[in-house]
Amino acid sequence: MIIGNKSIFAIETELDEYIGGDWLYGKFCYWICNKKFGLFQLATGLNMIRFMLNNIVKNNSTRNVQTLFTQNKHDIYYNYLLSTIWGDKFHKYYAQSVKEKWQKLNITPEDIPEFDGVTVLLIDGKEKSKIIAYDYDEGIYECHCELGYVDNVLKKGLETLDKWYQKYGGDN
Image (cartoon, rainbow, N blue to C red):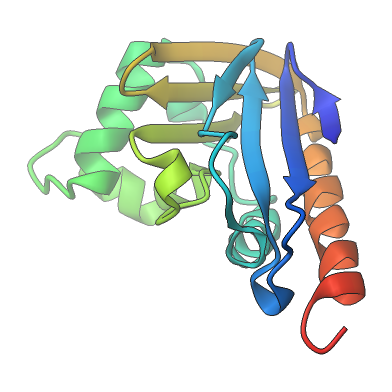
């Protein structure tokens, strides 16, 4: 199942034949600028992704960071990486990254092996959003979209996983 537009931002997901109860085994990846991010061919616990997507969706009003929005994709990734991921307190944007909670820009399902080496950031501007996607093997990509588009796709993806969990999870 594809949710969204692959040329901008989309989620691809499907259930495996063996669902595994609460684990909800299946496949999941992002499409950004017609490039796949995440290893769709590997089965994963969709319930873990469901939990992470829930947190990502809750952060939808905290991504307006003009300092980053106006930068190019390489500077955005570099400044985000050093100030937020590595916590370099001497980096020029460190204090600002803490104050503006830049960690909430990360829409990557973390701690999922299928997303090892992948970082996807969503930064809202005044009228548009910018997606910065990094894959260790592929490089950095940038895509622009309407404000709220990615959040709507993420929300629909979460709703799909919620429905599957209600139908197949637990004692069902």
